Amino acid sequence: MSKELTERYLGNPAAAADERSRKIVKTSVLGIAANVFLAALKAVFGVLSHSIAIVLDAVNNVSDAASSLVTIIGTRLASKAPDKKHPFGHGRAEYLSAMMISFLVIYAGVASLVESLKKIITPETPEYTTLTLITVAVAIAVKIALGFYVKGVGVKLNSDSLKNSGEDAKLDAVISLSTLVAAVVFLASGLSLEAYLGAAISAYIIFSGIKMLRETISRILGERIDADLARGIKETVCSFPDVYGAYDLVVNNYGPDAFTGSVHIEVPDTKSADELDELIREITVEVYRKHNVILTAVGVYSLNTQNAQIAKMREDVKEISLSHEGVLQFHGFFVNEEKKAMRFDLVLSFDVKDRAALWKHITDEISEKYPGYSVTITPDYDFSES
Image (cartoon, rainbow, N blue to C red):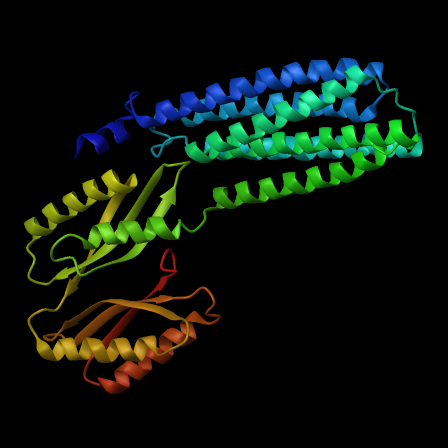
């Protein structure tokens, strides 16, 4: 095993994951400091000006500080080394913290909506001052800068928690901007729109929180890996001599940038066991080095290379199989002439309604063309092919 793989398995504290964790915590601490400062500032001037919008803004900043605290806790938990109970590490704790932040955003939106509706039913005349408007303007500038910075770091570090926190900060800037607009309208015309603007923006915050929650839950459930990553892994595997194809790639995500997986390779039937062992080890190291994915298993498909008649059979069977709608890929074809048996795999689309019927139809069609052979077809799922 390479030094890189050894460090990954042993949880070397000097690994890149620890540096990533430090950056996330540093960014979150900055977020907490900024939000606590803004919350205190807005609370004072919101109460003095009798502005429900500014007071709600202050409450929102407190929830944002709590979001950053959740991010720190989640990151610390996620960076724990693998143990007996969690052999693949604790990386998914980051998804749980991102989910909690989504709930905080939804809660802030609901609380804001309730207060706005109360003010619509029982209006209260705000009292704006120049200092109040300056406070709101400063809050907008700080929140926009904080939002872009935190989300940018989140994208760079692939941290859903930071991305959600950054998006939340941008939403806060929109809330503050609406408060400023309402203040200008009130001072110019005497018309108070705060409560109505608050209700509309609260609904938008709730919608955004639900969207964040859905995206995070989708990751926890397990999504198809990025197409570029899948393509890159297969290209790396196929770059080795005597590897004619890479199939059945399955990559499991155990947290941001924490991947394990398996793949099947198609190699000549003349390869010896020791040659395969060496090849598989080299592939495992190279895939980790280039793509940060640990291949826990590399299966083997044996390819007939000594018989021209079997090569012709392969092309015929492939043509028959791929002629059916819903069949995405054909691979792993091998014929045992002594036993008169052929076997291969078909990747079927998730859109196929009756997989068993399609499998039987193709089996019968090939058996009819080659009546002397037993036909074994393994239907695979489309994990990363499309």
